[in-house]
Image 1: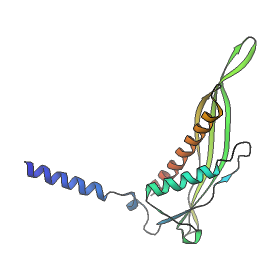
Image 2 (image 1 turned 180 degrees about the horizontal axis):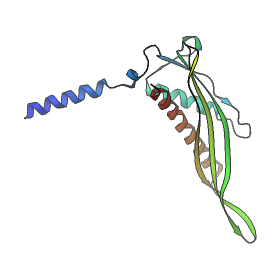
Image 3 (image 1 turned 135 degrees about the horizontal axis):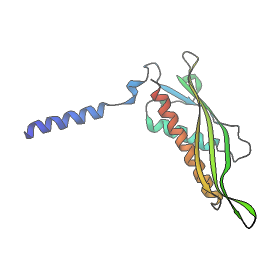
Image 4 (image 1 turned 90 degrees about the vertical axis):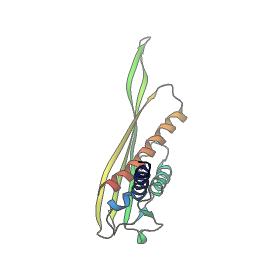
Length: 166
């Protein structure tokens, strides 16, 4: 009985070490170039460099596609832009005869497009949106922290979407 358990354990170990998302991608798509993120949102601090760094880290960590430093070496190109950062009032209190906001919804929209360089066709084009609530009394650093969390989620979701396309 102990011998059978050892065999099962070794088989599980071998199967787990062989599992990779790489098998899900077409064999001819092995490299990716990430274009600098465009910032179409002019009312806010420019978060394009932050998102660009997060895209790079997400693809390096995933390890399904090799990151390359030029379009000419790439099988896939990721183009993206920060389309909108918006803050809307969600709730407010009427105190002493005047309305006062006490909760806001922060919304971030990023457009992504993955293009197959070999066929010159779009593989995936989508606008991803993240939202967070922020209190009226939260300081600007907390708002920035939430925006960066939203950017991080968008970068990791982008990797999942392109790998999950196949």
